[in-house]
Length: 341
Ligand code: ASP
Image 1 (tube, rainbow, N blue to C red):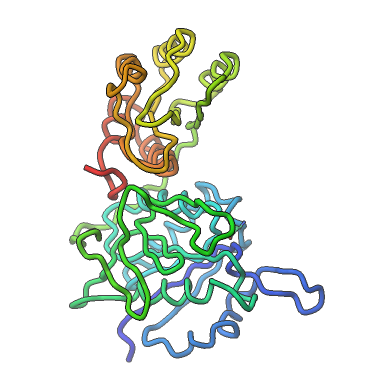
Image 2: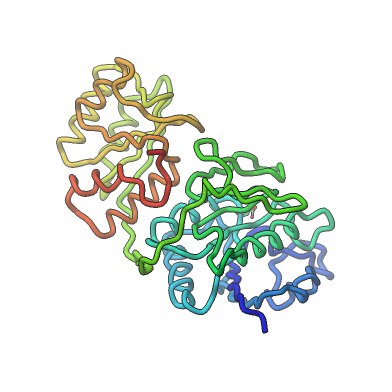
């Protein structure tokens, strides 16, 4: 009798494509036929159950609606399974991983997202290894306790904390990076877990945050930016929080018009969060003269959070809170290891 059960959730993406015999073009496969492409799945030493999104989505079409759907599937099946594997397109996988890490508070079981650059139905696919190893990781336990009880992203031999990743390459098999946080595991002949980097499980009850706000915007600054564009973004209707992607350690140009526009927007109630455009390192407002003023007018630093972590965290916080001091305070706390403390 197998004593471990894994739930596979298939959302869509490149991994689930096979060549249509008649037309020769790639189309999403039916989840029940997956075993035809990976016969090894019939020899697993754990139970594998499967559920599929209907319709399947290219991950470019992922939105808070699908994140809630995923969270509800996990919530409904939480007590019956030891771990969850989500097959997902690579384009927005880091957003989904980040969102789930905040939606699923007190998660004590593995939720492993994976996908591939080449479809399972293609001879050189990277999907087979990604898929099988993600299942192994989701089922791995020590003394009956899951080894990786967090939302992770597994790709090309590496296991990452999901909310630390970003997709950095559109064609390499090694498509993801996590610059500000080390790997959780590496796979070769063995899967080597880096225990000190992995969240330790506790006995708290799972809380699922299902109300997500969409009143959030992102603005990336660049040299030569025009006041009219900045003004339009800062005054976008219905937007209550703005993630401002700044240079280096949180710097912006210091033109009077720019600082004045930010200050006016803040005085009108907009919350502005400072995230670096760099792929590694941290925002340190006040380090340079160029960011000292930002701190003074009330921008909130995102430390070393990625843009996808910052945006999805705000969605979750603002779904439940409306007081700006509470939102800012919650934003700067680490919830799921997304900030280096
Ligand atoms: N456009 C696809 C997606 O993100 C690409 C992929 O799966 O790699 O769904």
